[in-house]
Image 1 (cartoon, rainbow, N blue to C red):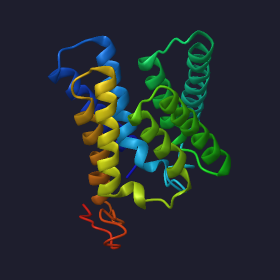
Image 2: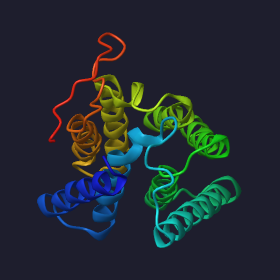
Image 3: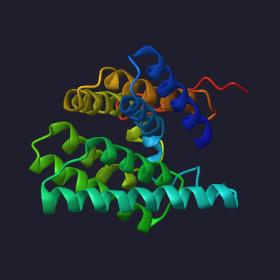
Image 4: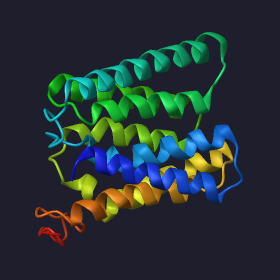
Length: 215
């Protein structure tokens, strides 16, 4: 299924959370960012089927998202190490921008850059003793090197993502982050289940794809 479709579904999930929970701009940004990343993160794996299908405008927007995210990550990292100031919401949005852009790229350089982001997240989680952030970092480090629609498209990855979301909710104190995370990630797997190739939900225990193609 197209990345734009996954992102649109994630946007709907984020918007629904904004309507359901007491509205605050900071929380709303988190709901939308978490839902968007969750809806697309499964496609950080392997040779992405979304790559190479972008218009010039979409390509430009992708590069803008990637570099805006990376520069912001560099800024918050500097503020953390030089002045011991942490900006969790800005950091989350920056990581979201970068990963959303990287979803539609491919190749070794792309994989290395994504893994480097994961290493930064892993180290930040370790130094700040945040288990959820270390888990997120490990996910980002690992998944670019996996085959497409492999382990990231399983119920096990969904459970892992839910645990990461739960840790983020406790860290930020924003109700609903766990549900938004799980709903966003699950929406990706469910949407891909409706395609001819389906999803190997129980891989490697059950290696056949489960599919309910619409056409």
